[in-house]
Image (cartoon, rainbow, N blue to C red):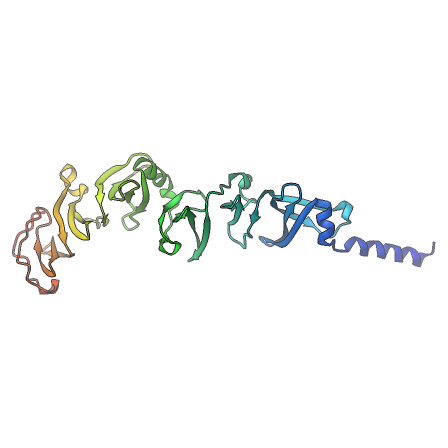
Amino acid sequence: MTKHLIIAICLMANFTHAQELTDKEILRKMQAKEIIWGEFYGTEVALVKMKSTKKWGMYEVDRYMYEENLQYKEIVPPRFDSIGWFEDKPFAIVKRKKKYGILLNPQEIYDAATKVKCDYDDIKVVEKDYEYYLKVKVDSKWGLLDWFDGIYVLDPSFDSAEDVPLFKIDDWNLDTYKNAKQTLNADIVVFDKNNGDGVFKARSRETQKWGLFQSLSSEAIDELIPMTYDSLRFTPVNNPYTIVYQNGKLGVYLSKWTFDDEAKQTVECIYEDYKRYDAEGKPALAVKKNGKWGWVDWKTGEEKSEFSFDTPEELPFPLYTQDY
């Protein structure tokens, strides 16, 4: 054998080794039915549907091998009817038995595939301010799901995905959030981000009424206002009362931090609007009734002026002494 012939054979062998296998050859070797190529965090991977199970998995496949030496590495086992791409997201959407689920990054969560619960009729991914939100549909209602922990931020109680508001649970509030939903049987829990003192509003899953609570640990929950209101506001910092709502009208509930066991509703929910004032260092409250403005004693509920003013700016200085 001549020198030139040996070189030619070596070059041909190297060229053959570097040849890219066809999809047909890869499918035959993997005993698979379909293959789709894409990327997984910068690495070329393939979604592969196996013949035996007709389920999809994700694999790293070395296409530059002889067919008999084909090497591939399983990233996601073939357990799903379909798998979406991660596309730099920390999760992908999967489907099984006509239901959707969330697949976490299997490179970071070793048992990510076994944790998937395909419980949702539909999933919409919303990206806002570099955060991902998952709106999920169960039966005919939509809710908001924490994609990592798999808990409902908002229970499925909205008629459309567009009706579902977006907000996040801070990691340090997560244990309190879980406890509040279970202990209070709440479908919505919203924390007061301004005060940062463990105060939150919660809505009863059964009655759809709101209350106000505080938890300084992940276990103990202190009731500030019972779950009896259509809605309510957080208590402002250093303020002796907050506003509660029933049937479209507002009233006043005293702050437990100021009045302790004497905290209660003092002003009936009969007013249409309100505005807080500082009257010589004491908090005063103007309210609107039947389209007109007047003063009310927020501690007793007693009206302290005629209701004859069109705007709160027309109100004279409160001539009564507000007990504080």
